[in-house]
Length: 279
Image 1 (cartoon, one colour):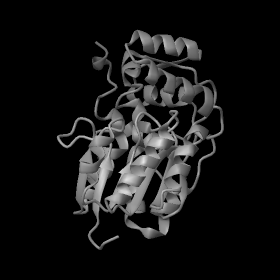
Image 2: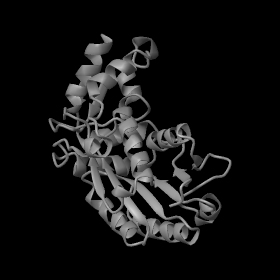
Image 3: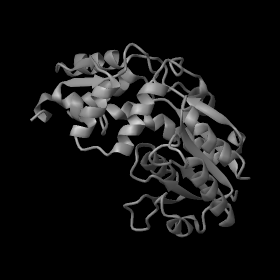
C-alpha cells in the first residue's frame, strides 16, 4: 500500500466498524465509513452500491451483515473482493466468528481473491450486554438464554477494533487468521451475576430452550432471518468449541485484552443497567 493509505470501513454504525473508523480517524488517516444508513450508502444485497464506496480506497475493513454463516455469503464476499480489486484495493481485513464452521467458506473465498487478507475470528462481544442484544432483558432484570453451563471468553469490541487497525496498518499480518478472545471464560450465568453484583441491582439468568428463546424473540418482533442466526449461534457455536481463551490479541497488540470485570465496572458507571431504566 501507499505511505498514506485510504481506508474504507464497512458497518459504520456497527459495534466494531464504528470503533475501527474512530481509531483510524484519530490516527489522522483518510477514512470513508459507510453503512446502509450513511449518505453514501453501502448495502451487501445491492452490488450497485459497491463501486462508489470502493473508489479511491486502498484498504477495507469488512463486516458482513447479517453474518458470514448465512448461506450464500461466500459468493457475495467473492464478488465484493473482485470489485474491490478492480478499484485498486490491495488490503482487506475481515471480521468473522470464532468457531463458525459455516463462515469458513466465505473466509476461503476471500483468501482466493488475490487481495492481501487477514481474517479476525472473534468470540461473543462484551457489548452485547450493554448496546443492544441483551440490554433490554438485563434492564428488566432477567436474562433468559439457552446457554447452559458452557463458558465463553467474551471479548471487548474495542480490542477487536484495535486489532483490526493494527492488521490494516502492518503488513506482517497479511495471510493470517487470528482467533480473538477475552482473557478468561465465564458462563452467561456468571456474566449476569457479575453485572448484578457490580450494579447492586438484581439480574437473574434463566436457562431456557432454543425454542423458548425463538418464541420470545418473535414476540418482540424480530424477523425470522435474525432469529435463525441466533438459533444457529446458540445451537452450533455455543457448544464449548470456543471456551479456551487464545493469546492472539496479545500477539497482535503486545498486551492482554480487557477483562469482563473491568468492562462491567466501567459500564455500570454509565447507569445503563440501573433499575431506573426498567420502566
